[in-house]
Length: 204
Image (tube, rainbow, N blue to C red; front, top):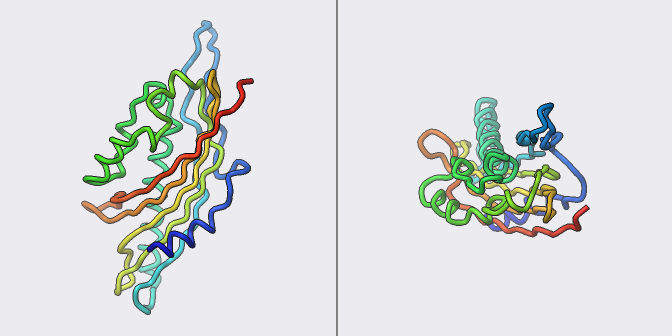
């Protein structure tokens, strides 16, 4: 698994220019003079998938559809985490992120909630920033197959960055490794390792 993670890391380029994101929402001036809260910025990961076979088995068309659905589930779970954790103003303006951890299972969910400052824009984001806009989002998922050729474990490596503007502007950077297993009929994060490399920017 360590070697597989290393191979994925090589596939993830640096976050130099925007990729996989849409236009972000900004606070707007209404006709009555009040400032409307910003909406959730459009965001989509640029994603890729790799297969890891544990046995030399033939993968049929039905198996490939199952693999594709599993990979798409990983992207969906992690998109929800990063949107709810960094881009949804309803969360970062209040500094509460309970709904960001819906994709975690059991102990991993409790650990994620305890490390919310690492996995999100942070509890003080509302007092620091006026807007958070996505910049780069890339995910590579390795699908580990069992001896029947079915997905047994998903391993996703994520590179994400966003531009936070306001009184204390910053570039928010998150690099994460996530392991997902099927729990209760859906894929859930059961283990993770995330590092942050945020950088302060000069105020305009």
